[in-house]
Length: 307
Image 1 (tube, rainbow, N blue to C red):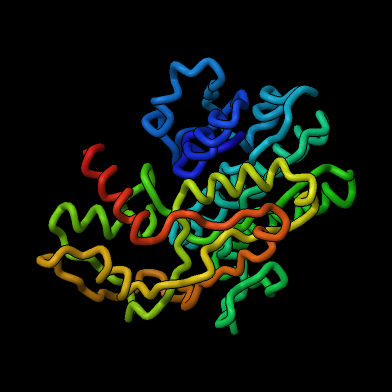
Image 2: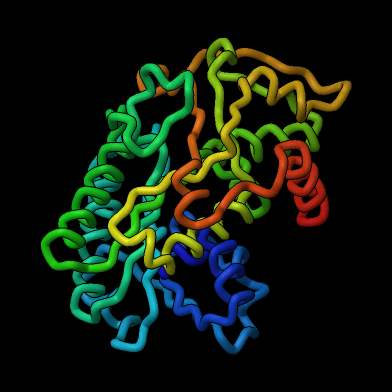
């Protein structure tokens, strides 16, 4: 799998090992870190290779005819960075995906391509976004991820390569970054523990569908190995959303200040994210298991123990 030392990747590795798989991970450690997978170092069924997914031959060196599947998680994921430097996102997210698909085509290896809910058009999403919802990428990050999906679909239709495209909604949990490149739940929780103000960009009425990372990892593995999911695009969400204002209130301790600040990339802000996971439930029997309140508490405990 690619992106194995990243936030979500680390949890997918854990899920795969729990299910008895041998995992050959690839990561260039630009977003991921050895710390994320340190507990697997002594595991006899895990090996991490440090390398760039966009370099020809790197992925193919990890695959052979006996490989059961390739889960492709490696990506540049920073919206603001993509607006400042779109080329880096194209190189990793599009060229890197082409390298993965070619390596999988050569070995006839099924692919679980992890995309993003950010590819959707956010207009008229009151009822929840399902997989038939129109796409409209609002940043080079989202555009490069949609391009990667289209490329993967072409390998499914053109070469009959078993490909499944996965679109998890906002994932949070332990091992997620707590700086600007992290997710809002991790940022807020870490700042609350540090006694710092929780800063909300804009008016805070924007909403997110927040999925705990173990639920996302289980979804990715279930979908990648499902015959019913081949050739499909599948969402993973919770079916409910929360405003950033309400999220801040949920996380903030009694003495923590909540501030509203000017948005740093308002042109690509998503006002409402609410996922419809009915297809995942029908095809995979998947549904989220961890509530937002429980997930925040698990994250809080982990941050305290890891500091």
